[in-house]
Image (cartoon, rainbow, N blue to C red; front, side, top):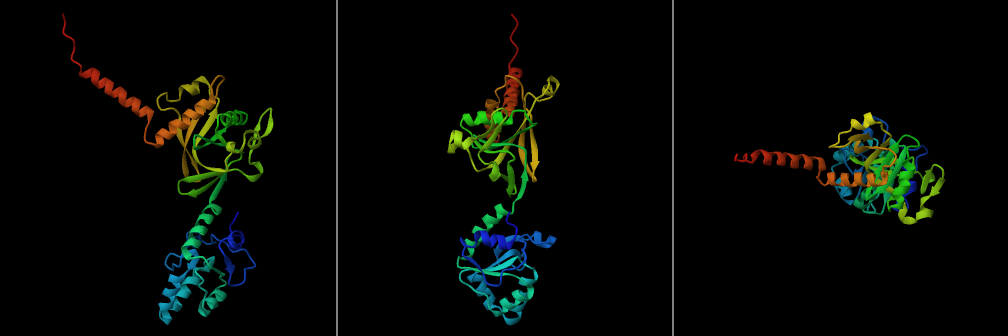
Length: 320
């Protein structure tokens, strides 16, 4: 996981033409910061001394602004820049720090870097990279599969049939992302992206058959590296009393909370004779309609209400 400045430069330095202006720190320098004030700072952005960034970027425009300041204002700005203890200050567009900035960086032990890229290109690349590299992560037990373009997580007790169901869905043209331990990262306030640990990629364990390589068996189109999580299906064997508690009109739709992101969750009863693959496809199609604003139970209720209104409005037949 990328969580230090040195690891970030090692990973992206060549592509983004980044190099050290000051000496590379001996100890890992945290990108997130340590104190609560630092952890709340934005990861990267153009020079900002009011809402400081962990990575402060100085390009041509910022350099022009600093050069136009008076002696005292320049000294105050430099003091504020480094007193906030950024992870690093990065100079772009071929700009290089002057003696005052170098002295302040040395005094505060703040690393300086430079890149020949223009500031917005560097910011956009690093912001995208850091959003994924530093995202909150959680590993869940289940099978993560793409069904009809939706990321679906199959969960349930061991031996309930998650892998067998996933295998049947794969034979129907859907794609495997991760078996057993999918890893989810919060890459946006309401978006979870699921991936597979490298060791488990392409593999699916099916009881009685052992470990299957889905890519080797079904081809490249049967696997997918990552997908956003759109729906959770909880496979549970239920008795008659539990089945009777499920609302026959609205079903068993609830909400799961993962990394503070709410995800629709459907409880799907498992019983002999039920074609779970078809039911999963139907659940996904039903959820797609909900996202588009259509709710079948609401439509049925409204239709029933209209039918009652029509019956009540008809005049009684005359007696003969």
